[in-house]
Image (cartoon, rainbow, N blue to C red):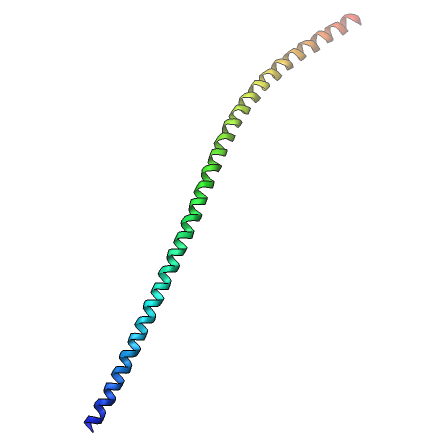
Length: 106
């Protein structure tokens, strides 16, 4: 009877070993597939990050140029404000002269 159990145990052990090998192969295959997916994803993300970095550099350059133009416009506006203030002063003097002339004629 012990002899009958030995081949049965051996068959069970072989089946377990076979199942273990199949499980290991499946895990290794799954790992390989996941590694390939991660590498593919990493490559795509690297490319996308590169594109984003390039776009940010271009936008930063545009913003810097616009900042320079805004500074120039602010300077010009300051000049125009000064000119308008001088014109307001001249208009006030002209209004005073007109008022004085109107008083003389009436």
